[in-house]
Image 1 (tube, rainbow, N blue to C red):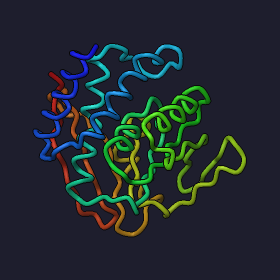
Image 2 (spheres, rainbow, N blue to C red):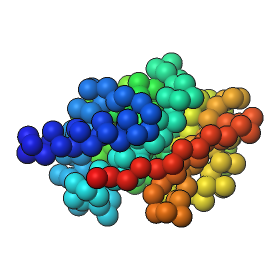
Image 3 (cartoon, helix red, strand yellow):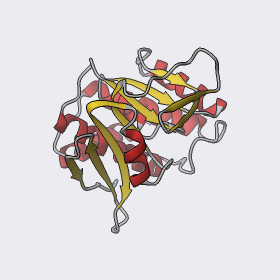
Length: 213
């Protein structure tokens, strides 16, 4: 297991380097911990089709693309990030592991929300929120009373495999502040993932995906 952890750490560091940033030791440690949680609880919580190390690592590497984009644009601990349809935590938990931004994870399903709660506490990010409900345009439909979300109050918004990218960019704009950033996930023709980012003012950035290995 120790040898596997070292190998995973090297893969994460290499992927970050290819994406143009140096990943901090604390982030690598958090991601290792998350990989263990995904492997341990994946089937019990019906988290993801990927349950082996290679498949899970592929999802993490995709999340690192979002981290790279956020670092390039500028993201800090004073900012707030909304991740809609968080599911197993891709990319929301990867963002929470690598960036000190305040992340709100939106997940309607009880078992997955319970896993997300467990995960953010295990990686020492109790400042992150997990809320159950649905984003419907600019409206918030909570499953649990008292869990409020306000449109236009976030600096960043992301959603993976929930909406078509062009639909999400338009919807996400309603949830970020003026000048905020909406992150959409686009499948590149090569099979690798490409992350596309659109600011509310229309300026865009993109970065190509990296494969595991």
